[in-house]
Figure (tube, rainbow, N blue to C red):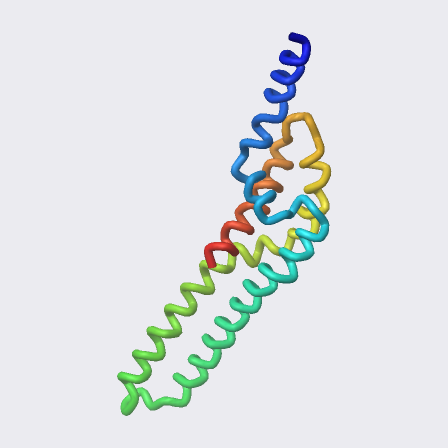
Length: 143
């Protein structure tokens, strides 16, 4: 009987933490370990930033190509290149919030261990850290 009461109390205290979708995403990406965080940074986040950099480079190349064309003679090609550039700019704009979040990733990663090991309910700031990391992971996975 005592063990059941103790187990029930433990479940009540840790239930919200374990059930949180943000915590599930952190565990799925193995961010609870230093090696998992390093792997995430080196593999997933690096690929994401490289893709954003490539899109930015493509936009610049398209802009330079458009500059060399004649507005009178190459109007159709200008329109086509402008549409392509607009699509790439839209894609880059959707990536920008994620890229901005990476500015605080080191600070956020430093807090993960303390947050995951605590038994008290999370403070609003701690919940924001966990949610921000989970959003970052989810956004990178979608790309």
